[in-house]
Image 1 (tube, rainbow, N blue to C red):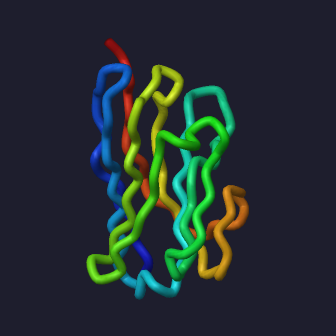
Image 2 (image 1 turned 90 degrees about the horizontal axis):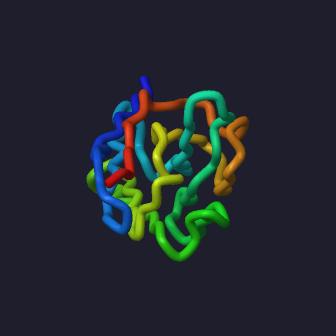
Length: 124
């Protein structure tokens, strides 16, 4: 059974960095594209970044372009989201999700399996 577990969240000051990890078990990671999403209370879940099966295609929301990076290590069954120059508006619960699609999408409906989320708080 596919399981995704996020880690690496926490409290960071504006301008700081965090690296989130999404550990995947129960599947062969190279068969899945992975997306990162975030959600704040009262708002819809927002697509942040994604990486396709082969790791050669990525996508980012306009709000994080140039600040966030995504990578995957299929040998460790883990996908990473490096977040730099963090802002207060990046505060949210961050989720990773998996899809067997070849393609990388920032659309929530494209993903079939989700982790439980990790809280990121950017505050001074």
